[in-house]
Image (cartoon, rainbow, N blue to C red; front, side, top):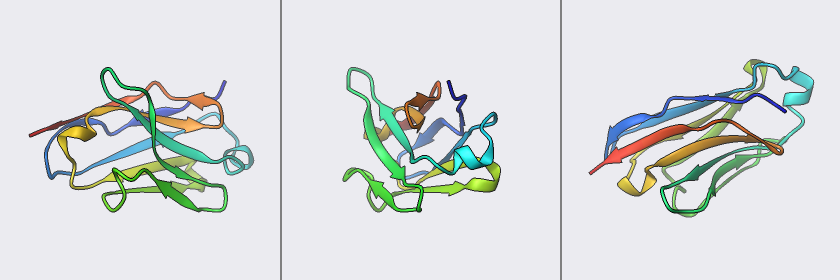
Length: 114
């Protein structure tokens, strides 16, 4: 199982910004770059949903609810992916999970107050 470590969550007011990071410390670089990655979130009482993904070639996709506000990026040399979240809304409150293939991190909580 791949270890994925998320960080950057916290409490922020509506309209604010947060940057989430996900590190895959034990993957060798050649393995890390060979897999699509993504950020998912799960709000209380709801199913986990895809927020953003970045393919091996760099193509990005976003859910409709975050398009224009969130940006996913990747630093291969550091074996990290990021999620820049701007103009946060209370409905963005959730636990955010990093995904690599079939592996998941433990999640980081984002709480947006109104």
